[in-house]
Amino acid sequence: MQAQEMTANPCREPEYQWDLVTWNDTFRTGNPGIDEDHQKLLQLFNEFSMAVNAGKSESIVQAVLDDLVDYTHYHFSREEALMLENGYPDYERHKKMHDTFARQIIDVGSHLDVGGDMGAFLLSFLAKWLSGHILVADKRLGDYLESRGINVPH
Ligand SMILES: [Fe+2]
Ligand SMILES: [Fe+2]
Picture (cartoon, rainbow, N blue to C red):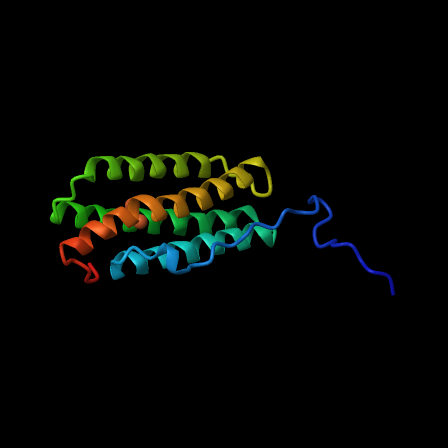
């Protein structure tokens, strides 16, 4: 028997398989509530990547993306409430990052074309933004909260 090419969907190019983002300790901000949210966010991001990797239909990919967007909004509002309640000095700048991201993800998501350039752009944008924002801005917030003795789940 000869080795077979992947022919699940002959219309699709041999696809790039998107990497998943694995949660690890470097993502830890020190605030259990925020960390829990981030784990859920990464899990939703991975579900999105897997749906694209598996060549799922546009409506399925869109539904997974909608879940990710909804959870992102929920998480941002939790972080913003923590910042306000605790007098976080960098609140404005951090909130602006959230707002810009929320606008961009909706913008790009509305032009989603699964397996096409937009899908590829969105995946790399999301992966970079999520990990970059957590590793820098959210960690800074976690350090601040920790310095004030606030590390209980919100
Ligand atoms: Fe966050
Ligand atoms: Fe944040």
